[in-house]
Amino acid sequence: MSTIRNGYADTPYGQIHYRQLRQVDQPVLVLLHQTASSGQMFERLMSLLADDFHTIAPDTPGFGNSFLPPDGFSIEFLSSSLHAALEALDVPSCYIFGHHTGAAIAVQMAYTQPEFVRKVVLSGPPLLSEAQKDRLRASLKPIELVEDGTHLTTVWHRIRQRDPSLPLEIVHREVLLTQMARRVAQRAYQAVFEQPVEQQLSALQQPTMIISGEYDTLRDSAEPAYSLLKNGQIRIIPGAGPYLCDQNALEVAQILRTFLVGAAD
Image 1 (tube, rainbow, N blue to C red):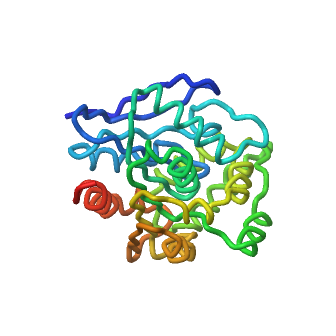
Image 2 (cartoon, rainbow, N blue to C red; image 1 turned 120 degrees about the vertical axis):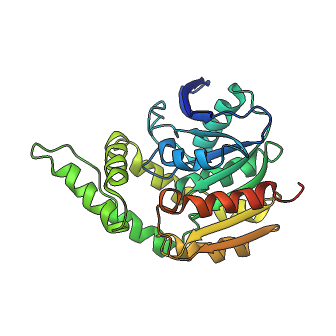
């Protein structure tokens, strides 16, 4: 059985770290993670999809083991960097799945590279009102290292509060990844706020599916995002929360199979 392998792709901007489960004769599915995680959040999903897709899960610049982006970076910059990495990996075209910030990047890539992206799946697309953006801005606080280690427990409690059922190993993983990305996580959220995502969603020509967990933190964005699509579908996963790629991986895998390859392009 194939195993997930790690590698680096050289781009004009810096090195992009990625995970890959390579299946030569299968279509490429690119998996884009949330803030402040990494491609590691997709490892279970990659294994479940191993018979159907050649999966690639890159770390967004500033996250995981990818290069540190410049100050003031945009979603467009993140998308261009990841597209350059995929080109370096000889990917001619792909399906793309993005979760939260990954969904924002997926929209950008589908908008700016329409011939490259064949179909799109957006999990918790961040289509936010100004009031929602203001509330999120107010809640964002920089992570400062402190002598007593409470910078770790603060993030631990925040992640645990989002999903009390999340296994300890996943909480631990996300705490460490958040600490690794502490220099850029706030800017990534700000980049999402600045993206003209409504305009971009309205312009997409590709078949696009919106999915959301019933209790996802971005659940309220699902129907408004769907209403903007020219060629869209929507699925709400009952009982699922914001970590559905870990907690509901079997359901997500089936949705991806059915939507992406269940019918002819």
